[in-house]
Picture 1: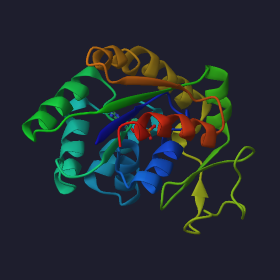
Picture 2 (picture 1 turned 180 degrees about the horizontal axis):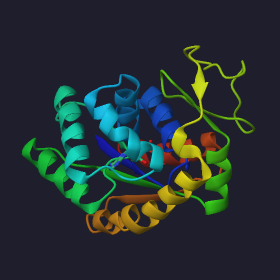
Picture 3 (picture 1 turned 120 degrees about the vertical axis):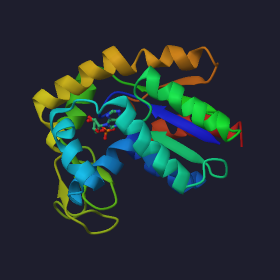
Picture 4 (picture 1 turned 30 degrees about the vertical axis):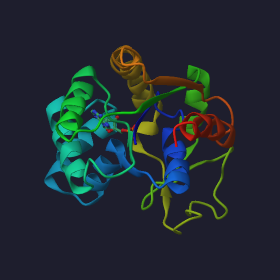
Length: 217
Ligand code: AMP
């Protein structure tokens, strides 16, 4: 089964993705996490990607598509439960992914859209803390770690993403509204879209996601 998670920055895709991996054993391909790992390892790609990540701009389609295709190849496209988080983000990316999956005689089964108002998104992003190692996500007020600035799961240090500053947040929300949101129409045409109100707690949102998936499993 292949699922795409779509939603504005800070809507909780990363948290839902972690819960889904735990419950269903999905392999997760998070384009943002892949890029952040490249930045940390200071690879050529990481140095190239850093300016896009810091400013909240999208990487060019052909670059991100190649990166995702490499990772797909490694996890064997046709065998696994795969969760796409943060990819595709443009129609061109979605079309290229479809072509690749078709070649492998597989397809996207579900597109889950998480929706929340701008004020909820802003308050979540401005207090967000991310784990530098396992990608777990916390919030200073709503979901603080047990020990200050230390990940509950792997004890690595937590950090504030550079793109979680107000200017970059605003740019990311604008890009989502203008470029990624219209992508939903592309998937609606294939009858695959499920919209979820993501303003509730992570556990409640997760229940809604599970209701959708459990009918298919
Ligand atoms: P995310 O963690 O999904 O919010 O992604 C963080 C940043 O990585 C984005 O603001 C972009 O700079 C870059 N990025 C992630 N996924 C994509 C994508 N599918 N297309 C272009 N840029 C991306």
